[in-house]
Length: 181
Image (tube, rainbow, N blue to C red; front, top):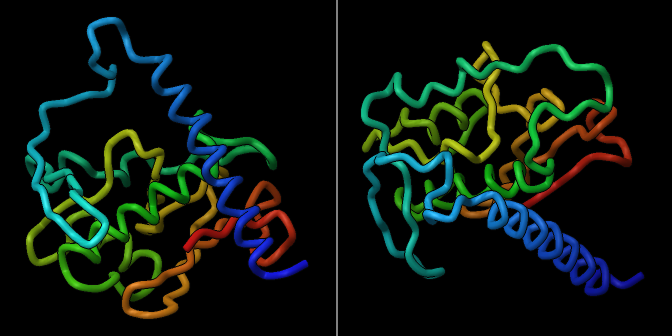
């Protein structure tokens, strides 16, 4: 198969999953128009080449501490959230993209260092993770996939990063891995 065909197919799968997710979220919004998870958290806006982006700024560093949502031990194949695993990866990618728009490049380092940077350990103390993004952090400060396995961040360049999930088998580098970039 050609690389263009694989890229196009992958793109269509991501779009389909996103549309399904958005349809689910739209159907769960009450008649008043406010999502149950909506909060009055202040936001900061920035504009980049791709348009306007809104990032969440926590009221205090402890208020959005995802480490309090550490993963419990789950049986193999069990998903820890009702958000589809690919959407969780896309949400992580979006947080990294927002960081890059504000700071001119991706956060670098290990999983805990990247996680800390996008959670507010950055010069402007901006938390780029939306509260309802499905992203969780374990007690070691590592961002987790839907199955409770630490994500693997592969820096391709200053503005391009692959994010790997070990998938349902919780083993990195097998056929069920999920990858976004």
